[in-house]
Length: 64
Image (cartoon, rainbow, N blue to C red; front, side):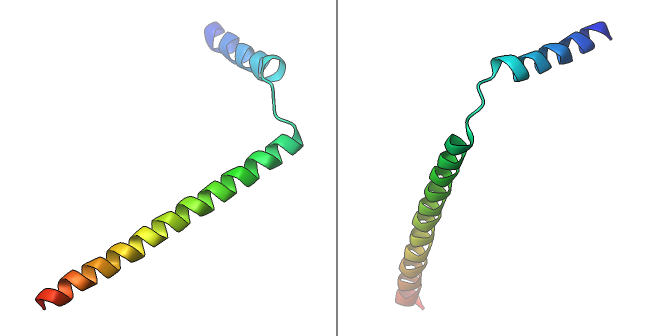
């Protein structure tokens, strides 16, 4: 039980005193970057999906 208590004490000490947390402005900048990157990746996947669908429709129309 002592080891578990010591572990959580060390975790608390590290989180409070040793971790460098981002400022609110840095956090907002990171959030915007993640949102833009997510949108771009979603758009790329959408374009690939639509393109693949059109190609497959063309292939199927050649045989049926």
